[in-house]
Image (cartoon, rainbow, N blue to C red; front, side, top):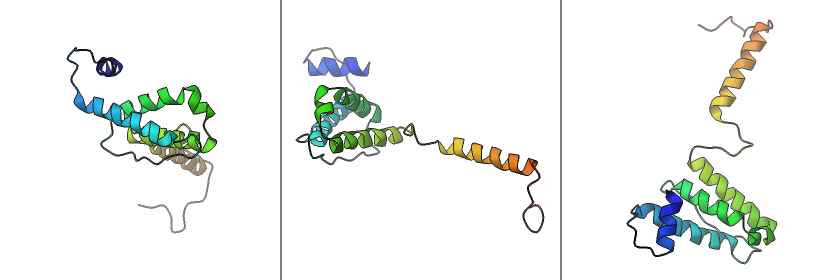
Length: 130
């Protein structure tokens, strides 16, 4: 539905699709891509905010990052796009692939501690905590 509504507006069709906030986020995310890309050598600066519709921004970023022009850009520009994409992932509550979710890290740490205690690791000085 998002892509349909955006295409209707881009093509100037008269179908009533509504959702003005989504459309404005699409327009802003497109402008952000132009600013980030700049001259293809020096990356521009844009900000991710809590008010962004992160899914729309990510869709626009994915489309731009698939273009041949993106691959012709400097490594600094490409890195800035990846950084910007990851910031939107974080805004959606998702973490970059290499970053572990805090809940998973806590669970893993608890399992390791339990394993250590099960192997007869010494209790802390003063006995077990109550």
